[in-house]
Image (tube, rainbow, N blue to C red; front, side):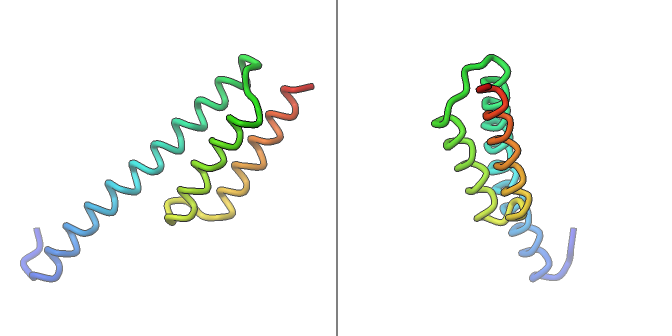
Length: 86
């Protein structure tokens, strides 16, 4: 544990941010898992894709994941949905 007052504050702030980031990332991963399950069961549709892409965009806008990583995830999801629709 740090002795300097500003370092103590940084520890507290970092813990809060870490918790927030983990919650956002966990929610995103859960939504992606729901989408993948629906695709595997041929129950996925454009609305579910939109909701899932929104979760990924939220994580990217808050800086939890990089914007290019978010775009890559969204493109791969759209590709999986299109392939499943055939």
